[in-house]
Length: 127
Image 1 (cartoon, rainbow, N blue to C red):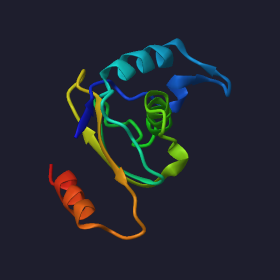
Image 2: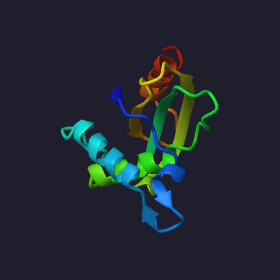
Image 3: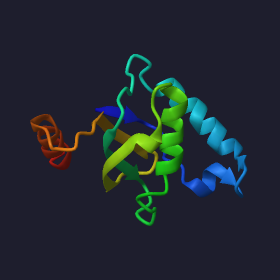
Image 4: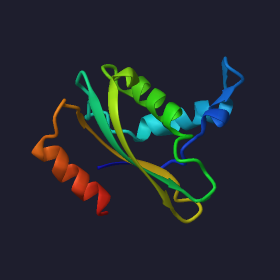
């Protein structure tokens, strides 16, 4: 499990209009890139992501952070491209203020379910 202890940004917080990234987004990327494990590499042609998004505000949309999150992974991991994400399992979880974060597992997506993916899914859903 990889834990990213930063409050997820929504698309609205990340960009001004259609062209300009906000300073908040740039600062968030800088903090997150330094926290992600540089020894891990997302290598594969297709991915399945298991994501827990922890929000301190229950009104937050579950998917608002996904685009900035995947763009961040593309910056950090040279071989990763979010166009190769074929499956997402996302849980929205409520946490105390100041504990906002994203936790995720990424594995190679197969056109069939592997026993490893069943184990990961069971563990992920039961946490």
